[in-house]
Amino acid sequence: MSRRKTTIVGVNDVPTQEFPWGAIKWLCNGEIDAEAQQTLGVVFINPGMRNPAHSHPNCEELLYVIAGQCEHGIGDEEHHLEAGMLLRIPAGTTHSAYNSGWEPVKMLVSYSAPEREMVLET
Image (cartoon, helix red, strand yellow):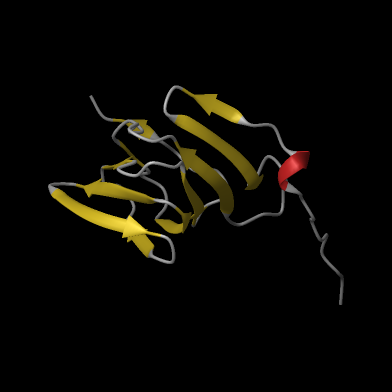
């Protein structure tokens, strides 16, 4: 039986993608590990900021709040999320998060594809 490659990545080993609303660090995806079947990252949204409405047509998203709180819009619904809560977003569903707290909201995001597609909504 052949053994597959194991990947170990630290949060300080990967670049930070900065945006006006916050930042993302990708810990696993098809670019980091060609054998990966998923995407995993850590996201920060700064207080009072919202990431743009978007969808992922090729994968579902699991979003786990590590710290802070946010209001997450999914379609026409708003959901209050805080540390310890998980939200599953079906593939192709438009969503966006607004940090309604006083500290950055920190979330672990997981996608069911190694190359997550993102479509910005206008």
